[in-house]
Image (tube, rainbow, N blue to C red; front, top):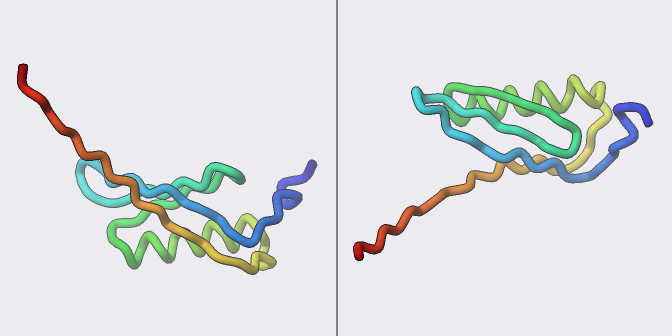
Length: 76
C-alpha cells in the first residue's frame, strides 16, 4: 500500500497545547504532525503538511479538534 492510498474527504487533527506555549496538531490516520505558535500559524502548518503529503491532490475538510480535560476533585 503506498502512502497516498489512504484517500479520505476528511482529516481530523487533534490539538495539543504546549506547556510553554504553542500548539501541536496530530492527524492519526496518515500520521501528519503540524506545529504553530498561534491559531494562524498552526492552520498554515496544517495546510502545508496536508499539501505536502498529498502532493496538492487533497480535496476535502480538515478539522482541528481541541479536547479539554476537566478535573473534578471530591474531598473525602
